[in-house]
Length: 125
Image 1 (cartoon, rainbow, N blue to C red):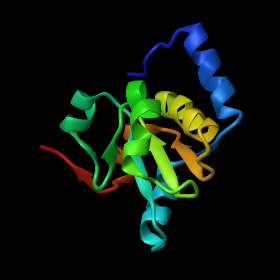
Image 2 (cartoon, rainbow, N blue to C red):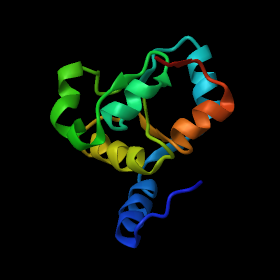
Image 3 (spheres, helix red, strand yellow):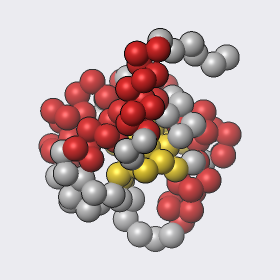
Image 4 (cartoon, one colour):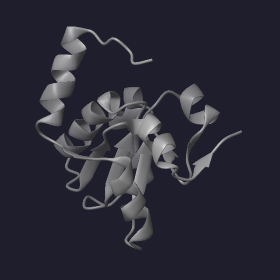
């Protein structure tokens, strides 16, 4: 069942989506297979990540991404895809990383639900 989001939250998501790159799960599959380096960041809450995530994903929660992303030493031009449950939180997080100077960031529209639907490799406990 789709979540009902509040209007102000939707407004900041739409503003971010207008300024960032987005991809779909099928695009992530292609990126995973093309041999070029790819960083996938799961921005969901820790309990969501621990319940299951895309294999190889790094967890940096949306609430701390600006504070903690530099601990990972990603190159400024690293190909980074962020995802959440559906693409809302990851859009805001992608905008933040873009504002911080990363130049090759995308948000996965459809998020975790898209990953599952696409049949991408996942880790589950």
